[in-house]
Length: 562
Image 1 (cartoon, rainbow, N blue to C red):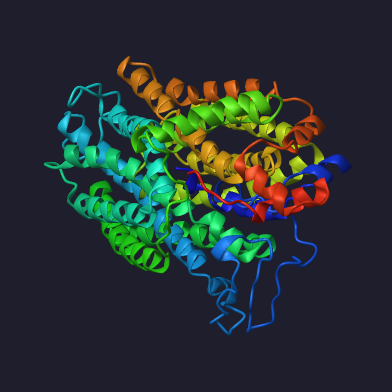
Image 2 (spheres, rainbow, N blue to C red; image 1 turned 90 degrees about the vertical axis):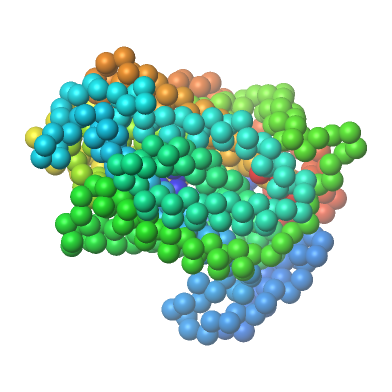
């Protein structure tokens, strides 16, 4: 669900990390990773990179191992498409293609969820003879009211991710099966999306179970793909990676928006109902992701394991041990900034990720909006995330990432509070488009500011390990808000209060962020050396000043722990 607003991350490229003080400008670490796409504004050419018009040879002098080789030359001679060529780097091409496929899956879930709600309501006897959902119908099917069944999808997939992602991370990290894991996940997603084309009255419940499983498999696909990012960064250098990151985001944003436009156009053009729109969305998505996954994984090469599993250790438990060791180290080494940021992320991400699920249920059940209308709301939200991210960058420049993030969560809470009381029924459904703009702006600002915050508190030389831990923090509690929402529905509480329950998680995150030390102290803490093998590599290759250390660490990461 983070992929719902990828455009927000593109705006990070316009944020100068000099912030409000000279100290921030001197000490802010630079990070090249998918979960923290906040590169420093480019002012000079990278000394390790050389380019020559259409005949380009790239070499990163700071790269290690086999990656310290001349990269392939550009194959695209036209300037209009050169940004899609990625200098002939196959890992970058494959990553970009896979991003366009993943984005469409998230958008297709909107239409499928609406279809499932209707079919569940039909089986529960909450549909009248004209095919219209009966208001305030509390009938149940399979032990639950129809709206809470959809929320339970997110609960199940969230719990699977929280408990199994460390295992998948260990497989990607400690075995040579990274590519095979990604291909297997992609194949399962294509199969599930294809089977769900047959979502009708007689099959909706098995399809709902498949959707919960698909949510977890989607995270496996993301994890296997992210593991290639450090290698891309090492191969091309920091400055070129900055441009690559922007291209990744633009392609995924464009794919998501285009998918929504296509499905909405087809639905409106031939007057499809919610169930038919869901089937149409799944059919288009199967073709879309089949092409994207095929060419994406065909382009990405296989890779050996990054670490060797020590004798006596088990692959099924090693991931959990890594998480525990990293958590203890953060608590001990970085108590003033990084510790509180990651704890706040657990709650903030839980509320933000749940917003998509809760919003679909709320707009459909409370406002009576069709799947096509809900799709338009999310298209508006997606587009509004772009100026929202830009606005957040302005606020951040005038304050600091911590203050900006707290303000963003506060505004997010206020908009959600206002929306819960303003969007009370079908007669005010038109206001959903207005709130779509407002929510889109705060969501776009949330992700761009969160990623900037993380990049600036990330200690030098710890990008791979701590980025993996950051990803886990974004997933560990995503199941709780949908569970609270579902329990409130089952208890007969109005969905207005269910929507407002998301505010609880934002408020907790704000409270935790208030424990962060003053920003200069946070930046100073992040520059401290760490006693790990990664830090040893960085120190060995950067025997110069601390400033040189910080300026070059992004290209020296020698491991990835998803």
